Image 1 (cartoon, rainbow, N blue to C red):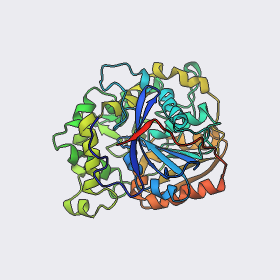
Image 2: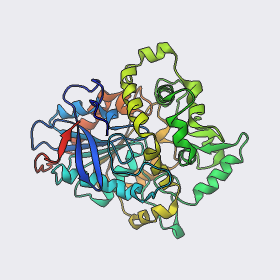
Image 3: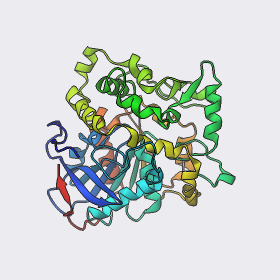
Length: 401
């Protein structure tokens, strides 16, 4: 664990960094705002890949200013959270979706809460949040899923219907991979690449350097890249998925560093990027320089292995019955990257989906690109679905970083 001050002076005022010890085998690093007064209702924000708790830095104070205690953890495999095996050749069982959901459920309890006002999950944090809501609906008063629609738990292997999401791994993924490889030119899905042994070293030590790689990756998935004009796809076929940008459906044999390198923004664009300055990008570079990406990649290996996800079918047919909201963005392909998932989420997976909202002027990194729009949308959702969460006090088992 590094002892450097977290965020290198880039954290907004009112946010603190600290460790919460002994949570489902982890010591979890969190950023939090609104911690000064006990008894505030809790909001938990879950990041995606390759993000960190730091990605919520501009949203934390917005929500805290309205009276909430807001917590964003580094999830298992990321950042300064420790206690997870950082190796390709290790058991993947700790990175199962249900165990990652348990991380969050136990974090809430360790923080001293019996209820939360809202749980928000972005990208890979979306299925983690969704399973939290399925496992413990009594603990979470409302749910927000961002960028990755949740189509519901998978059916048992003998009766699988909804083969549309990374949250529902099936043997159909192998068939799809073969179909993508048969295209001209041959293609591979990014999750297939991310589950490979080579992915960690490629992204950790790319030819262009880590800072240049991350700058290109964040840029090409943002609203700043003119090529992001998402639209629904007609089906889960190789030919249709080939319409996705290269960072979703890659040329077979190309590394991610090679894939995004041509999209590195100009010096002028970097200089004008207000949502991710070079100093802020430096926080990501520092964290991933230290840990690499393997911990963050483990979930994609889990999602590629149906045997590791058989337990999810125990929830087959169970719906999320909390007041729910889905948030995508004008220039984010995430909403449509799994054809059919959005409709399944609205019609089968949830019973109280209040709205599907699209944030203007943002790509995939909604909480960074348009934090004020997002903050106001979350606060409006909370107001419309107001509950009375019960806090049990401020935890004593943490320390500031």
